[in-house]
Image (cartoon, rainbow, N blue to C red; front, top):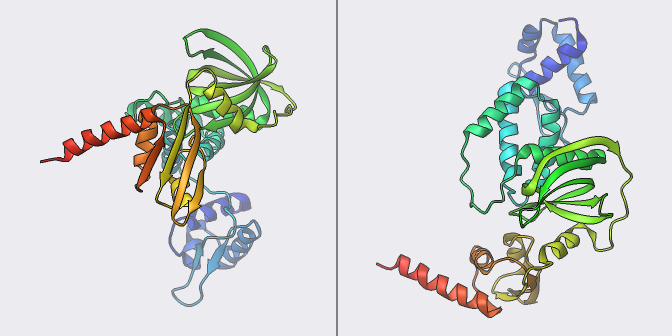
Length: 320
C-alpha cells in the first residue's frame, strides 16, 4: 500500500480495535515493511494518537487512553449504533447528557453517508421507546437542525404551535437550546416581534436554517436559564416549595431536576430546598421521593396533602 494517508487511516482503524497488534502482523495486513509501520506509528503519535509499544517477542502496538480524545474511525455498524443511541438520549431529554447528545448527534449526522442515515432513520422508526408519556419527546432531526443553526449562527424559520393550539410562522436568531430534564426549549430572538422568546421544541414544526448569518445580540442580564424560568412561570400558578432533607445539599442537588430551587445547607447533614415552582404537585412529589432520603414538606399545603395521600396509596399497595 503506497498511499500514505490511506495506509495511516487503515493502521489507525486496526489500532482502534481493543487488542495489541504485533508489528509483523500489521506489516502483513498493510503490505509494507516493519520499518514503515514504525514510521507510521510515529506519525500517528505526532497527530495526537497515544500509541503504546511493548518490547519482546510477544510485544506490539496498541492505542491507549491519552490526555485528549483524538478523532475516531467508525465502521458502518458502529456509526449507526452511536447515532441511534444519541438520538435516544437527545429525543427524550435524559438529564445530564441531553445537550452533549444533541451536539454530538449534529456533528455525526453531518458526515453520515446517506445510506447510513436511512438505516438510522429506519431503526429509529421501528423502535418503540418506553417513556413517561408526558409529551416531551422530540424529533431528533428537529433538535439537530436547531443545534446546527445555534452553532453556525444562522437564522432559523419554523412553524410553531402555541399552548392553545394557535399556529404561527417564526423567523428567529437562535441563541441556545435548554433542557429542563423533561422538556427541550429554544431561547431565541424573534425578528418579527423584536424581542427575546422561548419556544417548546416539541411544538416546533419543520425548522429550516436559512443560511443568513447574524451577529449575536446582547442577552438580557438574567441569562437564558432565568429567561426560560420566567417564561415557564408567566401565566401559571406558582407553588412556594419549602422542603427539608436529612441529607447533604450535594446529595440532594445531584438527584433533583434543575427546575427545583437550589439545595442549601442548614446544618450538619441537613439541607433545605425553598423557592417558587410552576410544576404540578404530582411531578414535584415524585422527584422528592426519588431522592431516597428522609424529607419533610413544610409547604405548600397542596403538596403536603398530595404526598400524604400518595403515601397511603403506596402503603396500601405494599400491604399483605
